[in-house]
Image 1 (spheres, rainbow, N blue to C red):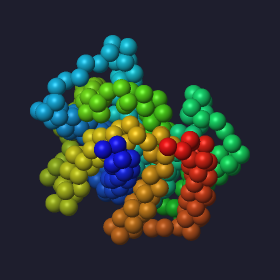
Image 2 (tube, rainbow, N blue to C red; image 1 turned 180 degrees about the horizontal axis):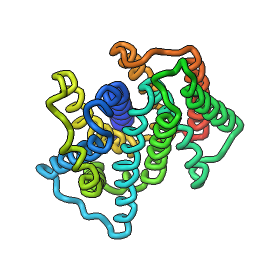
Image 3 (cartoon, rainbow, N blue to C red; image 1 turned 45 degrees about the vertical axis):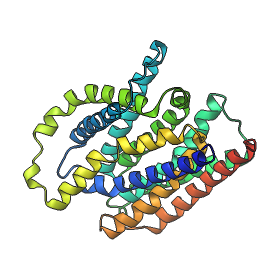
Image 4 (cartoon, rainbow, N blue to C red; image 1 turned 135 degrees about the vertical axis):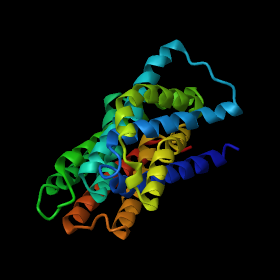
Amino acid sequence: MRQTQPLASHLSIALCNIVWACDYPLYNLVLGRYISPLAMVAASLVAAAVWSLVPLLWERPEPIERKDMTKIFVAAMLIGILRKLCMMEGLVRTSPVDGSIIGTLTPLFVLVLSVAVGLEGLSRRKVVGLALGMAGAIGVILSSSSAAHERSDTTGNLLVLGAAGVSALYMVWFKGLVSKYRVTTLLRWIYCLSAVVMLPLGAHDIYTTDFSAMSRGIVAATLFVLLVPTYLPNLLLNYSLRFVEPTTTSIYAYLQPVVAIALSVAMGLDRLHIDTVLFAVVIFVGVMLVSTAQRRTQPNT
C-alpha cells in the first residue's frame, strides 16, 4: 500500500495543476465581462464549503486542537480568500499567458520561505536558479507595459505574482497541519470559514450579476470555474503534501503554462510573443536549477 502512495500523490498534484491551468483562459473569458471577481470569489467559496461537507456522509467529524484553530483561520484567509482575490483581480487585468507563466514562480517562493524558516539551505545552484527565475518574472511584468502586449497589464501580473507567493506560504507553513489532520477535515474548516467571511462582501455583486446575458458556453465556463477549481484541486494538493516535499510538489506548476497557453491560443483569448517565450524559458531554467538542487540534498529513501 505504501508503494502506491508516492505515485498517487504525484498523479494528484499533476491533475491539480491541469485543473488550475484551465482556470487561466476560462476565468479570463468570464471575469469582468459577465461576473465580477468579488462575486466569483464569494460564490466559489460557498460552493467549495458545500463540497467540503459531503465527506461527513461517510466519516466522523475530526476534533481540532484549540492551539491549531488560529493557524486554520489564517489558512482560510490566505488560501481561501487572499489567493483567490489576487488571482481573480489579476486575471481581469492581464492575459492568461502571462498569468500562467508567472504562476510557475511558486517553487522559487517555496525555496525562499523554506530557507527563511530553516527547512532548507542555500547552495550556489539554488541562488543562480532563484536569480534567473526572478529575472524572468521581472521581464514578463515589465514587458506587459509595452504596446505590443495590449492584453497584458503590470498590475494584473503583480497580483498573480502575489497569488503565487500566497500559495508558497501555504505549502511551507501548513505542511505540519496536513500531516496532523485529515485533508477533508482541514478543507472543511478552511472553506467554511472563508465562505462565512467572504459571502457578505460579495453578496451584492452576486445579486446584481446579469445571468441572462450569458450564452450557454459562458454558463458552462462559469459553472466549471465555480464548482471545480476550488475544492477539488486543493483536496489533491493537500493529499500530495502528506507524501511529497513542498518544493517537489510545486515543480508541477510547470504543467500550468503549457496547458493554459495551448487553451488560450486555441480559444483566441491570447497570442504568444517572442519576448514572453524567452522570459518563460529563463523562469523554467531557474526553477529547474532550484528543483534539481533540492532533490540532490534530500536523502535517498
